[in-house]
Image (cartoon, rainbow, N blue to C red; front, side):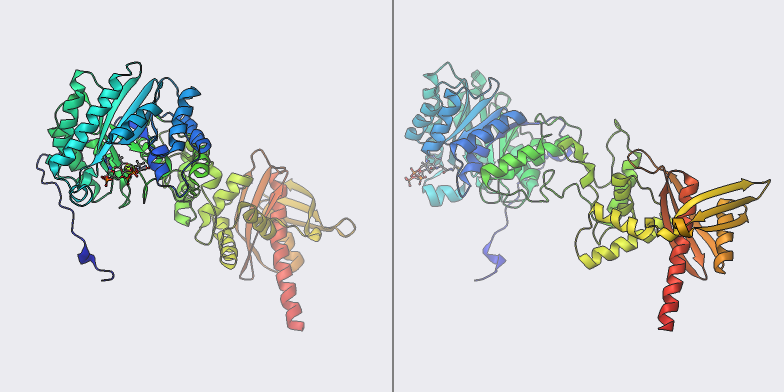
Length: 560
Ligand SMILES: CC(=O)SCCNC(=O)CCNC(=O)[C@H](O)C(C)(C)COP(=O)(O)OP(=O)(O)OC[C@H]1O[C@@H](n2cnc3c(N)ncnc32)[C@H](O)[C@@H]1OP(=O)(O)O
Ligand SMILES: CC(C)C(=O)C(=O)O
Ligand SMILES: [Mg+2]
């Protein structure tokens, strides 16, 4: 008893020597069938109301699905009523087939045909279970007996349809629990059904091969599909569909490999709602194709609407890491990812092929914004911090300041433990580098250049108490630095100094960043101003102010 793996037996792989699917590449989207309103619905704690089903149906149509399984009308009154509503209110576009599921039981098939009466295009989907376990333990029948259920069902479907030639009928058969069915037997049943329906004589047929329960790795499923594809009768005259479940977490992979193995059609649900761990997720598979440059033949650009409607109808929240749709899937918190994204995006031009590290697709294609791409916490680095200030505040920092400021942001993030939003990053930058004390505010400057020297005269401070300094040097910064050295009696070296013209969207035109060294201590500052010289001189004054304040408080501490 307990946690004992010996309770389970390994799935027998398919002994195949003519495997071709591994070399295939999907270059065309399969036909899609959305089964949200049936398989998705039957798995919900609270099955959808008619109003919810209608909302989800309208969304599926809007997204572009042309085959939509709308329910199991013989199972419940709401499913029946919903079907009637679609037809009687003329809600089904002329190029859309509604699909209805029924067991292969005469009374249920009859009721199903009642439900779809008057619809122009209908897929009647009949199923019975064929696996060894189901034959032996559920139906207690031999192979012939279970095959007879299928044949009977096929006959009854055909006879109802024959009575209603105004509808375009597609017949669909599923050997339910196909993955647990011996392949030769699955073929035998499928052939027997097609012998009734005769797709070769013009009857449109879908043979849907379900991984009702996902029992093995996706390559095994692909082998099963390729084997059926190679061995069934009438293969050129009907579509093979697959319907995978996600018990092992590989429903999408299994469907993709199945298409490589010859499947023409894929059933699934938006966001993967469905029995147990869910159905194959149509959003993920379609977007996987899209990200490979393949037209998915559905339009998922309104992803926010898709997740809103699916959440409202299923009452299941979207996981923040859900592929393509989750809140966090286009966000990088970690430093090296942010750095790479920032560098790639800086080189990206509209119309280029999308080659951005860590972003498999352009978030804007799904209605997302670059604003979400880089978010800051304690895992972030200088690239991310710089990106946020550039993106949201048009502030470019030199590399040396990025390194220094990222440490400050990191400390805040560590103290806080969570995310540091863009406004906080901006405020930290302003408080730390841009704040100007009134007594150090630059008021005027005057520069005189002779052949190789500059004489600078500056005034700074409050109105009544302005300080006037004069100095000389090779350039303006050196001249003012010399004046400040003389006034304060220290040695000042400018370690780094950068200035940037600012783009639109800011009041100032220039940003200057400076780092000075005084008596072995470094002090950095920055300033925004109308012109680059004002910005530079203000940055220098603020850096010196930092030094003077530091020295004063040190002296005060000693005296105390
Ligand atoms: C893998 C899938 O998702 S398959 C779809 C599953 N979806 C659903 O079941 C949701 C809707 N189903 C229902 O509401 C009900 O099951 C109904 C209304 C269809 C039928 O209900 P009931 O008649 O009460 O019977 P129940 O579902 O228990 O049926 C089991 C009986 O049908 C038989 N049966 C089950 N599936 C099939 C089938 N596909 N074809 C023929 N007979 C079948 C069983 O052998 C069993 O027979 P028994 O009564 O002789 O023992
Ligand atoms: C009815 C069938 C196709 C089904 O839902 C399954 O086998 O999972
Ligand atoms: Mg299913």
